[in-house]
Length: 122
Image (cartoon, rainbow, N blue to C red; front, side, top):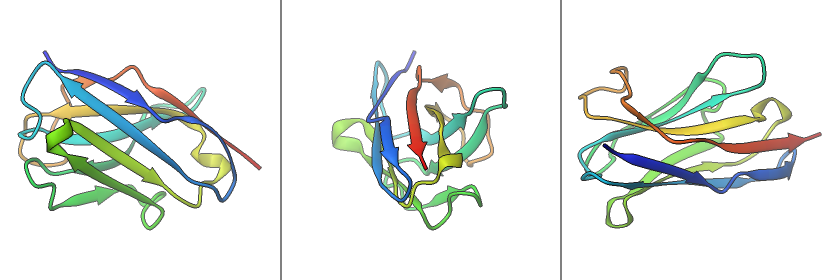
């Protein structure tokens, strides 16, 4: 199995920035497509961003975060990042890191972290 551990969440003022990290262990990392999802209270989980395997040359973002969030990966550290800028209160959620061994961003994500809380105050 692949173990994923998120970190970097916290409390930030609207307009501020946070960088989330997701450290992977247990399996080779670079061959996985990696994604970020989030879930606010009393809502369903929603897709945030994804990055292609290996070099991470392709990325895809939800419309709600496009232009504000950036996903990246460092295969040497087995880590994927989510840089979040211009944060809004509606970005408040538990953010989850996920991995899949498929070949496109829309394939099923097989492994999930436990989540990290991001709270944006107005």
